[in-house]
Amino acid sequence: MLRSRVPALRYGLTTTAVVLAVCFVVALLSWLSYSDGRATLSSLTARGLGDVVSYSDGAVEVKWPAGTARVAYENGDRVVGKQTQIAFDPADPSRAVIPGSDLFVSTDRALGGVTFAIAVALLVLSVGGVRLLLAVRAVRSSAETVSVRRIRLQSGLMVRSWLEIDGPVERWLPVYYDPVLVTLPSPADVELRGGRVAVIDGVTVYPSGRPVTKHPRGRRLDNPVRPDPETRAPTGLAAQIRVDAVFLVPAPFVGLFWAYLDGTGFTGWITTTLIAAVLGFWWGAFRGSDPS
Image (cartoon, rainbow, N blue to C red; front, side, top):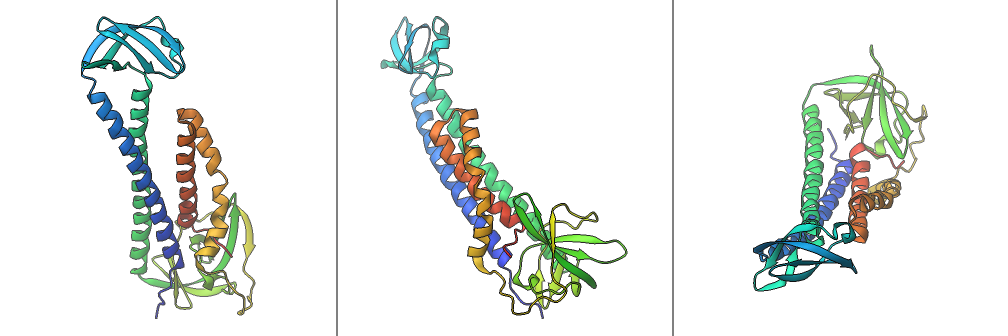
């Protein structure tokens, strides 16, 4: 009888929920900022043609027949002396914007934040759903008994468990971590369903990727021929979080790069860093990081 023990699924659902929660908060805040910007722009119903006459303290001064206004404009010195279209409030001409001014830029960025957060959420849900669907289909497929060896491979920041499958064509199957892998003899006969899902001592071990026929790259560590049955295998979310904390390291640098590229400053840095951090944890869960 198969035992229902799926720590990888629980960890995957947890990291997915965290990513979705962060995306929801980012999308909500971005939408509120976008709504405020659109409301301001929609109140500027009058149009005119004027000149940019000066720039100081982060704003340009524009003049046109109906009035004058100071408009927030980053690096506005490059538009001084040029003619420009002006949108302004007919009841208060001092409330105005011009193409490229800060209000347009911030509103566009806020809309981009909404789009980006939704795209990340859809990506996480879709790839997770496909992985789950393939695993369920494999569980329901016919089974065969194969001889396998459990190995661990470290490639870059990622450490994963693999099953090295003997046969006419040797295969390597990446699998999600389960404590039963730690005490698996090498080699051992296990039940393989659909060529992807292994049943080890009644415990179902799910694939964390597709099987390959070429030895995967990375520093290899084999299970002992006769592992100590008393070995204490890492269990629980805390063990997974400790090993996946390494994926937090690139997050601040990703945020810094994006803030520089997009010109969003501290707000862009903290938002991108947060999303990159939770995606790092999710990536470790999705790829099947091994805390043993």
